Image (cartoon, rainbow, N blue to C red; front, side, top):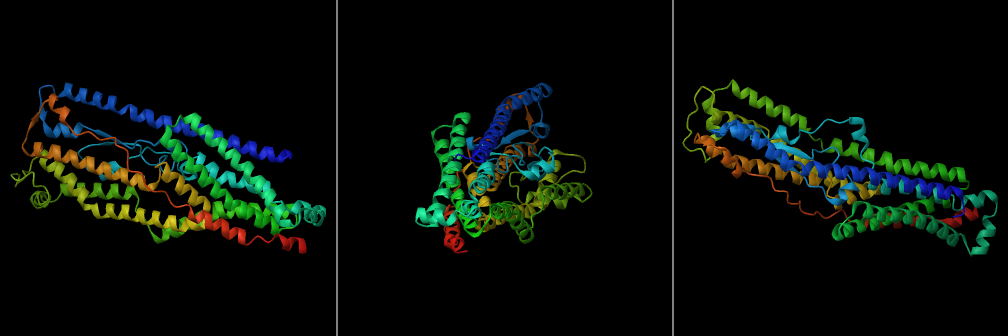
Amino acid sequence: MRGRSTWIVLAALFAAGMFSLGLGASFWRTQREEIARLPAQYEAQMERLAHRYAKGDEAGYWAYYTASPTWQQPHPLAALAWGVRDVAPLVTWVRLLGLEPQLYDAPLGNPRLQALGGFDLAFVLGILAPCALLLLSHDALSRDASRGTLPLLAAQAGGLAPVLAARIAAALLLVLTTCALLWLASLVWSGLEIRPALDSATWLSSAALHLLFWAALAAAIASATRTPAASLATALGCWVFIVVLLPALVNLALSASFPVPEGLELTVRQRQAMHETWDQPRQPNFARFLSERPEWPHAKEVPEQFTWTWYYAMHELADRSVSELAKSYAQRLRERRVWTERLSWLCPPMLLQLRLCAIARTDLESHLIHLERVRAHHHQLKLHFFPLIAADKTLLPADAARFPRFSDSAPPSLPPPASTPLILLSIAALLIVRPSRLLAA
């Protein structure tokens, strides 16, 4: 603890954590502000439509130009673990058109930066904190071995195991203290309420279990190497393999085992199906549409000229044409998530990331639940507008107050992945520690 390098490593870790908290606070504040502006934007839109159709107009026009905002309210802990929130669309303006192209309408970003992920507190705890711990404890025994003082040290301490345990525990305590300070800073910075603060407290316990695994690995490295250079190279090699290579291998295996069609493919196929319907006979397709729309019982025939009835029927038929692909898309994503949790037993940083994002509701499952809520809202729009369009109703500006609006109720809290794998991995790493072998050598 008197070494200058120790405090340089801890200061760098703390600075990286504070930087991540600043980015997270800005990220969370931007999302909250964007959601807070939605009611005013919706009212401004309805005022423009009320001015345009002051004397009333067909329900089809009102349905076409009315965009209803849907959003995913960010959990306060989303500022600490971004998950998929930095790439998934935060707000989706839903219209009574084909739904599939609207679900994946996200603003374009730099793909290279998006591939790197967010620099959040979860990244600091899962990636940088283990690196700091390895830098502080990799040479717990090799530095005395290189000086020739290791036998004397073992004789004074009653063996190498107490020396190794004391030095690894000291390094672990320093890194955990730094992580705890970052956690307290996140509470003060974010102004979390009691329940989110209790949820974030599980972060600290998860990080402690995660660092316990790395401490066991550091003990194994310290007991298996003879020189500080060899222990440093081994520690960095293990860190790169566990943090970089192993997740990449898991991702490649999952991508090959569970190929997932992109949202762009769903959009292209839906639009192709809609445009092809223009050149097909109307009546057979309209009869197919009516088979699942009992609210239009009297619309048995569709004229050759343009009608709103046929226009919205075309959009729904296009959605139906890719419905199986959309279900397969969600199912494949869920299967990949399940297997990611299973394979994360082999990769502690991945397991920690999954756990922290699940607590913050920024994981993939929370996003899929949000997409289901958007589909349900789109269905409510259909139930409201389709009967009006079928009856050729004329809507007045006063009728706009009855248009369905999206509910901002929070999604259900999902159980995070268990911490048992972290405990088992730590025990497994401790079993391979043999400090006495180094003394014998």
